Image (cartoon, rainbow, N blue to C red; front, top):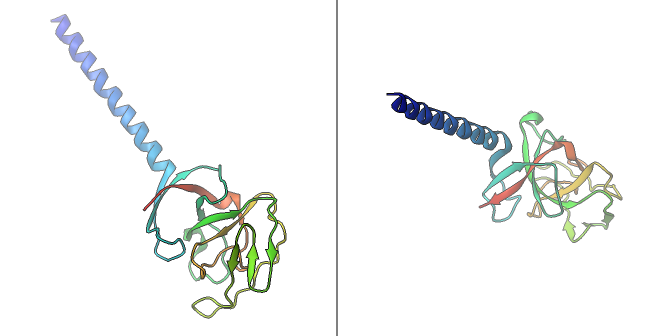
Amino acid sequence: MINKARDTLLKLRFWILGIVISLVIGWFLLSHTRLHLCLTPSLEGIRALLFFKTNNFSQNDIVFIQGHVYKHLDVPLENQIFAKRIVGLPGDILIRDIDTIKIIKALPLVQKTKEGHSLTPTQTQVVPEGHVFVAGDHPRSIDSRYEEFGLVPVEKIWGKAVFTW
């Protein structure tokens, strides 16, 4: 009888431990990952991204930006999410020609958004500490090439893409 009670207690402990471990893993995944659908052609060939919460970024990482101010946006900014590629890091030099900005590669500029809003090419010469220069893959992406979007403070970056499809 004692052995049966002991076995039952061991099984119960095993199940409780399994449930606790499952809840901790589930909490971690839910609080440290986000799934984002790309509804614009800003990132070529990418329709969905899985982001992992981190503050460790490097060049060419696709990042999840939340709460960044964009002058021509007509929705509450705290709810607006941007997925862009990091092109320039703090200390990178920006060279502006008439119709391109060069960091690593030339990024074409457009004069207006598709809605007709005027765009002003950025005047920044060096990416300052605490900011990154982001760009979409699509030539008409509104991003750090324009003053209306500007450089992104690193505290506005929630995480980076770990899986895209």
